Amino acid sequence: SRLIFVSLHCTGLTLTSPRRPNRPVLDKEDGQLVLKVYLQNKHGIKELSAEVKEKGKWRPLKQFSLKEKKELPGWIKVPVSYTGCKHQYRVRAKYKGGDSAVSLSATQIPGQYDTEDLTSVMGFNPMKPNITWLHQNTFRVEWTTPKKWQFSDDLVLVVEFGQVGDWNESRVEFSDSDDDGVIRLNIGRISISR
Image (tube, rainbow, N blue to C red; front, side):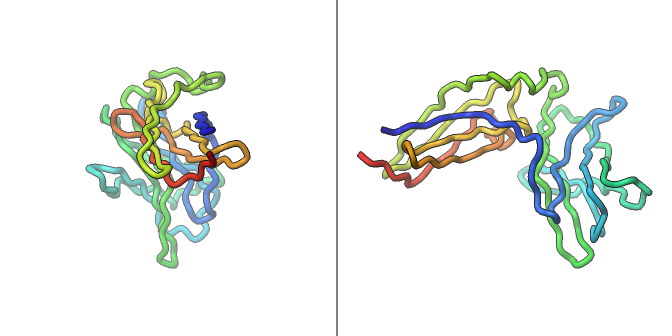
C-alpha cells in the first residue's frame, strides 16, 4: 500500500558548517527593522555583508561592522528598510584566503510582526496535500501553507513517502513556497511493491 504523511517541524536552530554564516534574523528594535546575525568569532573573516534578493538576483545591501570592539559570541546587526513587500536577505562572509560563503536566507513578510506566535504550531494538524501521480512512480505533492505562517523561515514541511519499513522524506521550508503560498514538490522514482 502507498502512504504519504505530512508533518511540520520547527527549525529554531540550524546546523551550519564552520565557515558558513548563521542564518540572519529580522527583528524590530526601537521601531527600526534590523537584520542581525549571531557571530561566534571573527576568525578569518575579512568582510561580512548583508544581501537582498531582487528580481531573482542577490545584490549587496550593507556591510556589518567588524571593527567594533564587540564581545563575541554575540549578535551584530544592520538596519534595513521595511518596504511592505516580501524580501529575502542573507549574509555573505568573505575570508582572508579569498573564499566566501553565504547563509541561508531570512524573509521579510508584510505584516509579519502582527501575526500570532509560532508556538501555536504545537498541536497543529496539517490538511492533506493534493497529490498528482505523474508517471513511472513519480508524483507531485502540493500543500497550501496556513496564511499565518506563509513564508516563515521557522517552519518546515516534511513529506514522508514509501512503504512500511522503507520510508523516505523530503523537507521544504515554508519560505521556499511559491508566491501563492503553495509548496510544490515533485517526488521521483520510488519503488512500490504490489
